[in-house]
Image 1 (tube, rainbow, N blue to C red):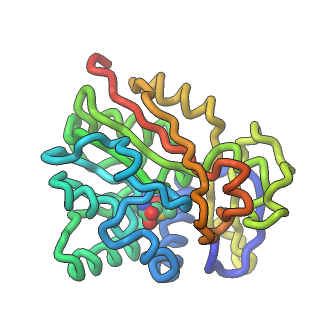
Image 2: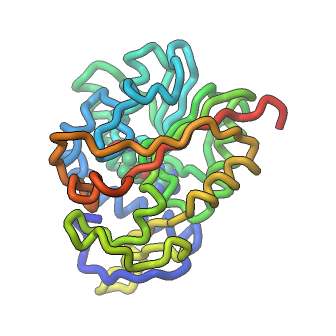
Length: 272
Ligand SMILES: C[S@@+](CC[C@H](N)C(=O)[O-])C[C@H]1O[C@@H](n2cnc3c(N)ncnc32)[C@H](O)[C@@H]1O
């Protein structure tokens, strides 16, 4: 990640509480830079699933959102939810970072398209059972939580039977490679099966400052299936011709050869 105090990188187990305590303040620190660097690419009321620029208008993975109750988990500045609102969906946001939500409020005011949003965490959704028709995350929350089992169970709980779940994450195969957009990032150097979290520790204080969690494709499939979902899609957007934007470790150099983003689509079974 960008814009941190001096940190050292480790791979080691981290609890849910430690992940949350690190990532909330980290996103608060990073939010201004994130929005000024990526806001234009995301679009104030745009819906991209990842750095490839693949849009929900192209994917159609949420289905028709008009007149649907929709929750975005890890909504950041609410760009995707605003896109949903523009198509007649009742989209709501939830994010761990207060500063990201302040950006969401700012863009609400600038666009006149408001996304009611709450501060919270993916592992304890502050909503009643059966509240939503659609829950989605575009690179939001899921790879930042340790207790993924609870995050997916919470999604199943707030979805109505037959509801739709879709999310994008860093493609699990990317974890084999250094997080480098250049040629360096094309040589596998770590085990795909090593789920030990990526941790940045503040050099001065020794406090965990940022955490990301990795799961294999098989982990995701098994978790969704045992949480009551039927997987209907796994999209792996290709890097488009002429797209030269670099976002962290995502670039044309790597994107033309290996997938950078995985997008799952699933339906909650009608009988659980
Ligand atoms: C990469 S951003 C994605 C947001 C938005 N889709 C975008 O493209 O800008 C990840 C978001 O997940 C949020 N997040 C991290 N951990 C979370 C958690 N445990 N619960 C909810 N949101 C979380 C961060 O605060 C951040 O706003």
